[in-house]
Length: 186
Image 1 (tube, one colour):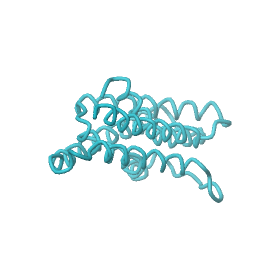
Image 2 (cartoon, helix red, strand yellow):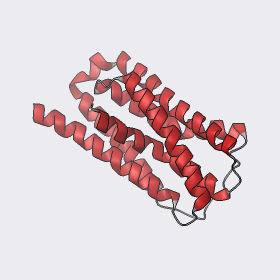
Image 3 (cartoon, one colour):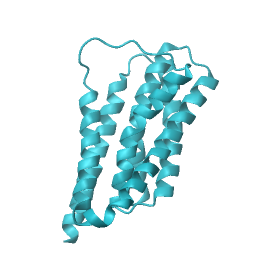
Image 4 (spheres, helix red, strand yellow):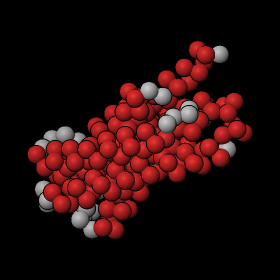
């Protein structure tokens, strides 16, 4: 996996955090301390979860190596499709929770990083440099979260669902690329 692919995956994974940060920015009640704390926790969880997934994936890698490219595709595509699906609103808009509450922030950090955990399993199958991936995902998520919160403060016309839609499309595209690369090698 090259750096460009890793950055694109990082951006795709960070779109959930961007959407959450954007919606909290809309409230206009955030101060820099809140934004940085949110971004740090989002970045930390988005970085640690792939490492945990990678560790789990490596433990079973020898058993499933003949189909690892299909598993990586299925993981990336399913996460991407889930993000695309969730980007379309269903029912009334939900009232947002208070990001300043640490319990809310931790819950959101975990919820937005579940896809990163599953992606980490896929990293084991495509033999990505997990330490480079963890660092890049964490850093990009931090900055994307800050950008989302600050952009949300300034605008009220950009729906957060567009960020989730874009992230989903990127993840599906990378999943397709993994399979196509494997099929051209055979």
